[in-house]
Each structure stands twice: as C-alpha cells, then as structure tokens.
Length: 234
Image (cartoon, rainbow, N blue to C red; front, side, top):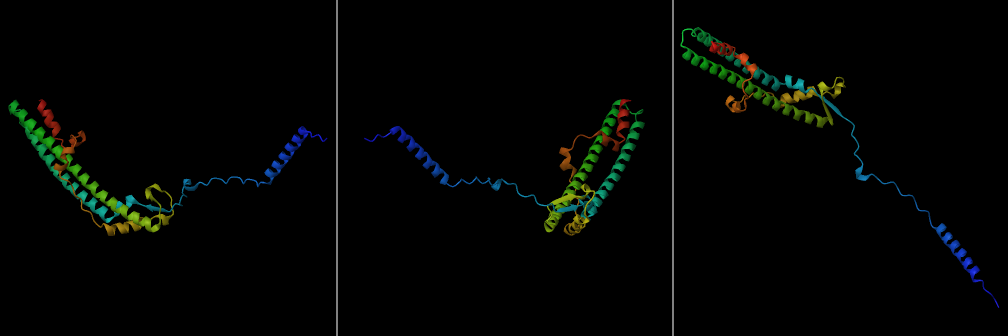
C-alpha cells in the first residue's frame, strides 16, 4: 500500500508555483522610465534681440518748420499783449494819481465811491490779463500737441522701416552708436508732412468759467491797485 505524504506534496506544489511565477515575472520586459513633461504652451516666448533707434524729440520739435512757426506766432501775440498791458497800466497809474490829488478837495463819500470804482477797474484789468495769458498758453500747448502727434507718426513709420523694437529719447542716452540716431531723417519727414501750424488762441469768454481767482503774482501787472487801496484808508 502506497502512502502519500500530503503535507510534503503541498510544500512541493507551493515551491513549484512560486518558481513559475518568478520566471514569468522575469520574462516580462522592463517598464521604460516616464519621459519628462514638456512645457508646451506654458513656455515663455523667446525675448527678441533689441534693435535700437534713437530720436531727439526735443531738438526736432524746436527746429522743425512747424515748431518754429508756432513759436514765432506765440512770441508775436505775447509781444502785442505786453504792449497793451503796459499802456493799460500807464492809464491806471494816471487815473490813480488824479484820484489821490482829488482826495483833499472831494467830499469823503464821493471820493470813497470813486476809489471803489477805480479798484474794480484794476481788478477787471487783472482778470483780463490773466485770461489772455492763459488763452495764449492753451493755444500754444494745443498746437504743440498736434506737432508731437505728427512727429510720433513719423517715428513709428521709421521704426517699422528699420525693424526697430526699442525707441529711446536722445536725452536719455549719453553714449550710443551714431547709426542708431534717426533724428535727421525724422526731421526731414516731419517738415515735409507738416511744414506749418496755425496757432489758434481760444476766446477768453470760452475759458473764463474755469479761470481761478486772480493770484497775488498777477497783481504786479497792475501796480496802481496798491495806491488806490491805501488812498481809501485815508
């Protein structure tokens, strides 16, 4: 009679199964390591190399035909105003002198009324002088803005032709390669594009509503105001 050792047979079967499983696992190909993640669309774009162009904005504005034109017009108008102001101040001084002479011979109440009237005349002159100066400044700034816009258009065109991606003010660059400077070409094109500009000064009535109260500095344009005030106290 044959005896079977079931316990030993079970152990042998387990050993055989483990060997078969190990052989099967060893026969499988090794898993390749994961490839690094690509940055894809999250990668920053490459920074282009700077292509520089330098423009002397201030110099071009001052020596251009249109720039000289508006400056000449502004100087002429300011000169005319100064002559008018000088004449008006002389008239006010003469009127104040007459008022002072009449102080001793005119009844107090009548003289006080004339002094008040004269003071109002001085203040009206001060307001008018300030408004006219301000109107001239506004007109000049408006013309200068138009010149700046025209020059900017010329500079943008030049930058496109040169392929420049960096435009610098000449005043900001103490040392540079002269081939970067496109100021002369910009000036030539600006003069051809805008050879003249008309200085248009707004009416004082159009800006009177936004005009602040007369400043103390403007009072020096009418020295007659001080004598009139002192005369009133006598």
